[in-house]
Length: 566
Ligand code: GLA
Image (cartoon, rainbow, N blue to C red; front, side, top):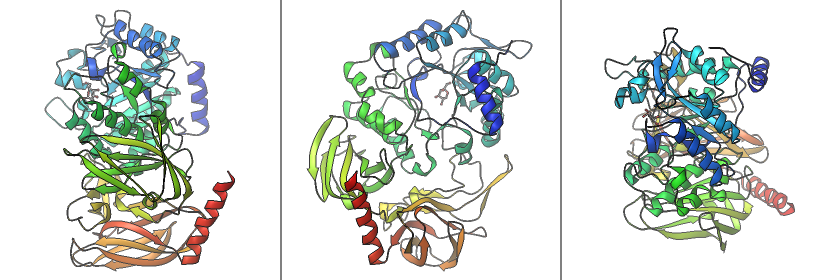
């Protein structure tokens, strides 16, 4: 098959020559994908029709640009290893589909697997996918997909790479996905790369991919949506601009595995926006109801998702299993914050947040982003009663932004964190024996060096707050809340500077003690790291910054003044 280096590919190639691993970082991918409604039952006309419908319904203009063909288009390989396309479903190959999509001003996405077999060939009898994965054909397939066919996106599944059953290969996810990233980079094309390992794959993914699936497959029912949100509550540290946790494709308007109520649908879409997940519509766009179309096209929610800060909201308050999540919007440490109240419970829930807990003060203007209504100006706190499974998504604009003083351990970056069992050690956020901890969660199983023997890599099993922000150089007392039954060691560093090795013992896993260390922080982001390479560390609840009184009031006043001038 002839490979032509297009202008776009050539420019990206030249760039990648200049700076080896330079990638173009974008807001979360928005578009449509074929899997949720159609599974492998796809064809040329269907994909073209969905692409056209994105434009006709006004969704393309709102940002839904990628039209992604999922599993089901393949028909084995020829004697040269060339991937073949199902000639019943796509009688003219994939070229006309990509041309149609590009002709509409949209982008085209494709699917493959890190192993030999695709998921639908293993689980759904789709024999065409039996030798269609990338294994052994990395460069050949990447050249075909990106240089020849000009796809702009690829999702790479892992069914064929798994250690399950006799048909699969037991491959190392880190090794495989890194090799595939290299093959994509070799094409010189600018391609969005999505990993699909159905669990947080490991922090290495952030360096090589634009997004990575964090859960098993979504279904169009509440238990599925709830469990996906739950599994992403404490993943905010692994999201940054250009690199996102993927909560899976949207079930808005899908009825394949049940049906979501109106409240559940709003919760689903709103949380995907708060968490900066890719937004890939999964329904038949041609038959969207007006209500679902309005929700998918909600520009105020989309703005939270596409915000160039690229933040995933973090849990700031856990109220008996109902949550308040927050993230900065438009300006880091600014006066605007996106706030979600989320009630996954089976009973209605009265929820309340003190503005001080959101680091906001003065009058706070609250706008409801689903109703598109200003709710008014509030002081001190905001309360609401939420029905079961309901959420409220709001933008808070305050007179003043306060200095943040509290950093939960469950919002910190755990370098060895992964959910695939690939490493021998891994710290995790846990609710067990955390009733006395703030947020009722602590990070357990810290300490030591975690090894991935298949990939030949290792990671410190540490906890790092990467963005401890102060507006100016300041003295501070770090108050680290921890639990541990027996004496355990913990090293603390600030911006790489060793503050010492501290022996900790709270006497019981249920009792929280505090380690206090005086130090200095520099203006801007500070990195505070807790580790013990030699052995087990205490469990960590949270970090609180205590400033000398004068320093704190000065910080707040200065920030207040600056804002007043804007
Ligand atoms: C896996 C993925 C799904 C979909 C199917 C296709 O299950 O997680 O999103 O791509 O494979 O077979």
